[in-house]
Amino acid sequence: MLSYFVRKFGVCTGVLLKLVHPALLLFAVALFSASARADGIDPKVIIQKGTGSIPITVTNPNPMFAATATTAEEGNTHCLTESDACVFEVFQNQTGRTLHNLTIAINDLTGFTFQCGDSSQISFFTSCSSSNNGHVTDVSFSGGTGILPAVQRCVSPSVVSALSTSCQTQFTGGEFGLLIDATASEGFDDKFVSGQTLTTPEPDAGIMILSAAFAFGLLKLLRRGA
Image (cartoon, rainbow, N blue to C red; front, side, top):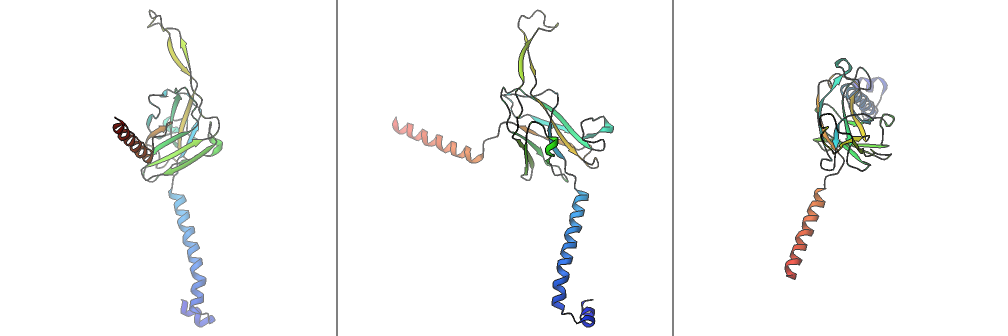
């Protein structure tokens, strides 16, 4: 083919290759990009308003979650559209403080890339970012008002405990919904999604090592003083 153009038009082979290579490269990029868009399903992670009963407490600030993605046909009314498949869990902030930072750590699923939802879909926070370490995808939310603490109040004893003189504790408010939604139900429907809701960042390994070294040094000084 190249020799034909050389004989017909007197074009140098090297010049022709320089012209053909960029065109082939652009064609390959377009082809693979289109393939990636067609095959990839990127579930969106969104924080919304909601009502539920999974408590986030001082003693359990990072509760686990696990659920199977379902569609509207299966009775799930929380997905963004009727053709989507999604997971929806609701938590309540019972820590007594506002949650200004929230990270959703999702165990990776083969073939799926978890990412931030659109800013217009997210409540309570104004900023979102995602990162993957090869096993878990961390989707972190910050900015905005954050999640206000639930209000603890005393209610009258129930009929069952009518003989009790102490009141019952009840929390109101401080709730938020976690929505993980895939825009196409094929593939994501019936997938088991698990992870953890992180409200208290776990200590970095470097910080833990420095703390241990500091404690060891302090112990040596105390022994010398003795």
